Length: 264
Image (cartoon, rainbow, N blue to C red):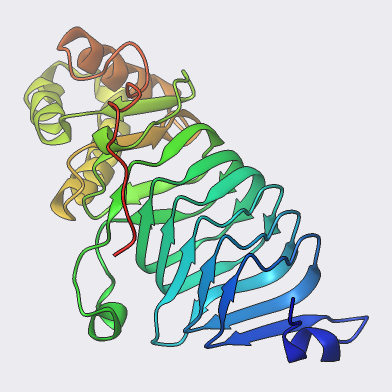
């Protein structure tokens, strides 16, 4: 395999790699230890990034789209993940450690995850700064298997259809499949809320309402964050929603069988 020149030139103390408008098939970067990775306008098909460790991973830098098709990131350790305009299709992210994923114009389709994703936002809406480069307003997030992925500090925003993902089944998370109705029910019940809990309940409802107003009508909540502070307020809401059928006894059901997606 041709070795990209910046990898050969990288230093031992602070290795870095730039991939600038490359088209690579079945290339291997397995086990690379890098301080910085910057990928610009490149396409990877069946490439292996297994075991790669990067402090600052810019998987899609610049305005040109980066495509990752059938790539393997198993065992990757990535801090500060930046993706501007990118598309990941049928990629494997098993046993990964990812954090601070800054989400731009990103399509994530039929990918499989396990391990941990921390402190990240997965958005169905393309941020304003990336819309001109992407030529679209929406991200396609569809058919991904997240059942074995821990999601501490992760939010789904901007209209990600959670019924189209295979989500974890765990009491560590709360799932509101009809968040608009759940908020309305809680607002109606507020007069019955104990006075000492009402302010904390209102704060939680405000956060959920903000997500709904931003287009996220199915809300996924990390229990640790939801019950932080006044845990009784979180319990009051959870009991209300469970009693009214707005909070399933389990986390979101595994999504139905998908036909799969082809690169287009």
